[in-house]
Length: 414
Image (cartoon, rainbow, N blue to C red; front, side):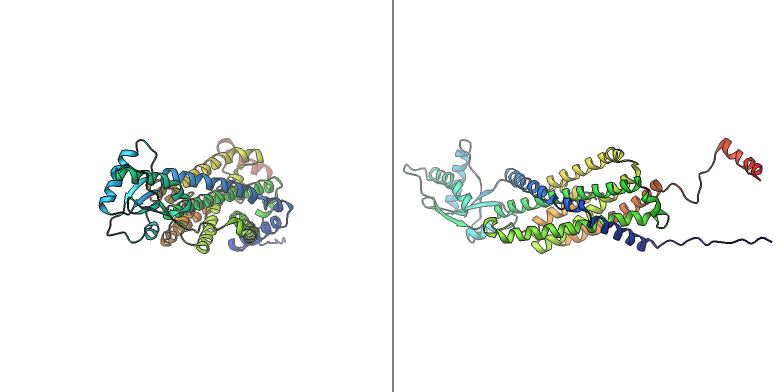
């Protein structure tokens, strides 16, 4: 009489618990490794590139949307200035002018603070005694052209009328230009951080595949949990790095406050902008990280990773250029396309947070991005499971001659 022993299959951990186990394992291993110390040196290069990109962005914004001279004079004097501008501008490089209606004029300082305008300075007073109000840099540059315009408008022989200067702290033009620089620097910093972290998670996966660690994990943990756990572990590591870099940067600002001066404040304010930057960074990382992690699952070696990741890298560069171009053209069809496309939406929304004070668009954008994050992670986890684990309870279906030979082979063995 034979006895049979039935061994119950070992139950696996639930998906959420297993993903947490993998995330904690990867997070601890990376955080206390020597490579993480070199990883923390990355912001030095990021800072240099961000400063250069911000300078280029400010210059591009100024060239694409030059500041305007607001004319706040009596109607007859304003008409004379417009006629003089039409005569002289073909011969001399003069700033564009715009007449402020008498009913809307309050004070030069109030005109400079008007939102939606790009006034660099305000011309007030009279033609014989013009007054120029604006930032010190701007009115110093426009003092000569304004004196030339006033003399041409008077159309009387005599010396050029002296221009009185009234410097102000800032104008709408300088604020707009400064916020554009902040937006460009933020987009550049987010792009560099995302690309660096996504590459790290892909390299980590390829290394574990080569060492057969993935097969050991798959014996006890669902492959979907491995995918999700690795993705969120690298996101947690990135937040540790951001905390360290942010703390060092804050100490540098406090130590050299007199030399650094005041930074341009984003439209939504610094606390809200920092919070939005972190959330949009997480969205951008989860989107591109799921793509790179899937590529790592399909690549058997590091050399294959470089080949397969090239299209994704080119796609990310295209997304970065799209978001950077949309930075200086808010509300355009290009910016709307950048906001709607999932991979570029986090970058475009960070740029908008630096330049627009409205909060409700960010609530809509975060909902839209969260939907695509769920889709990307879901699709990537399924493809990850199929590519990494090809073995399992279901064996491949035999075809043709092999299918007919199986019953005969089974009888022969019996």
